[in-house]
Length: 398
Image (cartoon, rainbow, N blue to C red):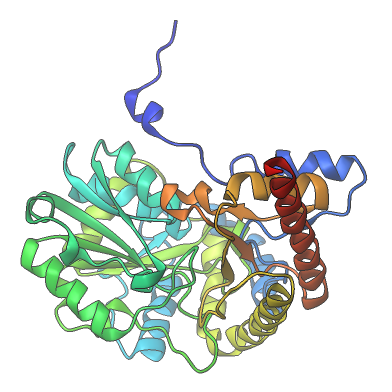
């Protein structure tokens, strides 16, 4: 009989793994389902990017192995974007690495810089690739709960000294998934200082840096002096350009760190499809043009959903970034049963906070993946779900 590895056994269930299956049942039963679960944009990619991909697919050279070098024009486009967006000069061939989506680069990183038994600091609630990459590298996760009273910031200096001494990697993500929290430069400065002091690699996940509202501009970790010594920053074209299924992102860091991640990836993949890299170069070269309408659309959705939530009995702040609302549930309402009832009885898919780890309990996440009217309808249904749950709770006590 085949035995499974301890690494596999250590992995918790992935929040979205069963998403298509659980959604299919009510749809087949004829229910009108509003899916606010996965952060999967409903808007199409920019038309010029699609057309660039169509042309690239016709070029036989684009069907060759890309290896980790990838397409030089994509690397140059990344470098140009980093300079325009953050004012940061980046050498395209030694400080950039194309990724098959930022997720795989994040998950592979511990294999490059951590040994079995080393500690990786993992925020909770958080993107499950941090925990998965840690466990698959046979490292020990140090789970750090993110709390509303601390603005959902991961404060490394709060960890015990012996933990910091044994930490190889710290995963930090702002704008944050799922809480939509943001971090100012003062926070980033003290985080970088802690990593420098303890020799910790800072894995900075900046996938949502261009989805910002109300005048907020998200920084790069490399705007902090000294960050180049200890950080690798991850970016994605998925959300910003509605290219989630295209699977393309990139990492930026000093040459030694990028070389280490490149070596790991050389044994696990042969790089993203070259045609997608050519199309993505168009996206990055015209990023300012393409991202502005996405921000406008998402801000209108955020405002519509937040207003509807307030009217339905929920309390939620309007985030300044990302594409999610992290909604507190009333005391005593568990997130998993609430999310299940919302789908089965009212046809709304949301993610329970507990699916992001125990520290996410007491919340649910809404992805802004539907228009304002559908969001208002979804929230009205969620209000009914909540009201029924309260009525049944009161009836059970009487």
